Length: 320
Image (cartoon, rainbow, N blue to C red; front, side, top):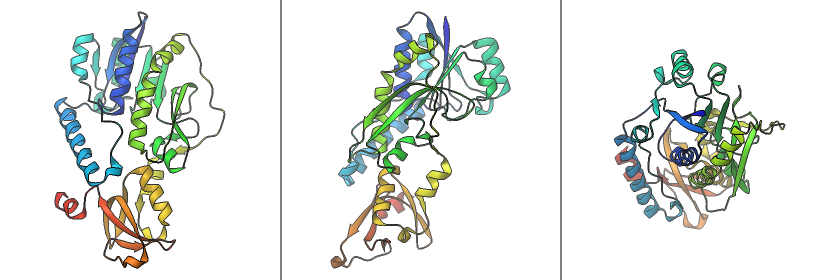
């Protein structure tokens, strides 16, 4: 009998889709059981539940102000893991100081939980060699096609680079980020009207259907396919380098539009103040448009910043 521990940083959004898929897949097998779920920084269920509905309302308001922002998918409901833990008799684990690599947590896993399989769904912490050694199999879900899109915000980076498709990978974990052998990959086409938010949800929905196959491969001892290509890695610093813009006039209108579509929000400095910009508009010279949020891009196109956190500036400043 194999014993599984799921590691996640959140019980809502994309992780919720994957956790539900894992619970269904585990319930269908008699040779494996869910021993525990580890959430390094847990919150009372009321918090994520309230934030979920606030987020939905904000998305609805934003889509009214800008129909192009209307999402194809609703944000999935958060999971009440504490209730499920009581129902299905698995433990909820919170490591000391929120650190999954804390020595006391590793000791507890080894002596009390005695797991054999780790499933990581957006855990956001790297497993140390000591933690990896606890498990016979440690599997991570990554929202990008490996090895080309290792690191953070893989979906957004694939959109930024104009890929015709974006994908996900289930891979064995190693001592390096996103470099372990690949078990399963899947891909989706990217249409011009899609954003990274929708694509991440669509990938998770599809990836959840692959979890039974991933478990079967793990139980059969499939080593996976080594990542032989060099690939690419994208860090938080890489993200900030494109989304924090000190001089927007130095960029072309095409580049600004490209970054905004991929990353949804840009921090742009205008007149020595930073603004969270979520939509821009291009004007013809004949209109003579001017104002403090207008500038000419490097290719000569007149640009106006028209939405800030998806809101008109007056409402954005009032809420801020």
